Length: 281
Image 1: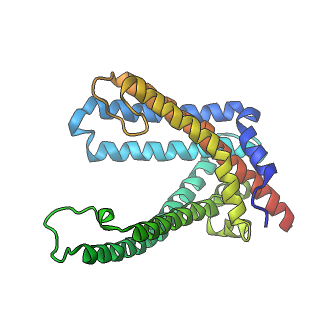
Image 2 (image 1 turned 135 degrees about the vertical axis):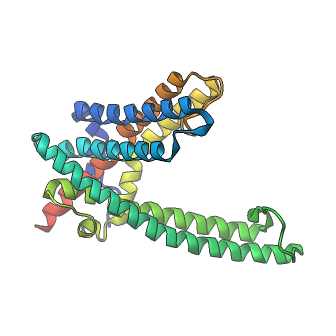
Image 3 (image 1 turned 90 degrees about the horizontal axis):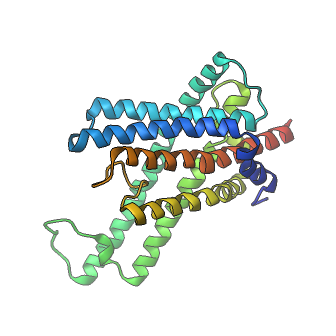
């Protein structure tokens, strides 16, 4: 079993250089929506934009990221640009794929999280019995403060397994994006076999592809925070900072996320899709 697919990793990292216009368009779209969101929340103050406003912003952001995925994945697959109707059909199919993915992730990971919570709760009960805490507390209790060293080790191991499973599961669903665009029909679970027996390699390769971008964006966020006191990765409000400044910083962060995280990740999975589907023919 191959753990690192060097050809896919190279294609993913090179996608921004090979197709800069597509990546720039995708980044600009998501950056614009992020700036709009920041402005709306900054200007509406503590009351916020309300339920309808939040819903509209979520729908805009959701579609922006789907369109960005179409813009960067089509050239990665070597597909022709096509006309506006082709793009609209691609986006509508990928909206369905993204929605179904969200439902699957929430269902599977939600169930796994409940199991994790029960196991951590059992560890907390052991810790409470050891420390003599027999009566239910009146207020909030940090259960991690009840853990001994051995219980901490078990808790960290459980959380690590949960996080690893979650990331692996999401990576197994990602081939649905290139499969949907290449086949011209909604593909999600139908694309699951593409990485059958290769899931770990796909996960590791995708992780390596996004690491440089994540490091760059984290460094940017900390640099901004050290200068302004506002971390653009932590929200859209900041005391003493102009709303336009907040919008600009959020736009840079989100646009950079598209260019340096989403693009190489989808480039990797586009390459893996072409590689493994050609082998199965």
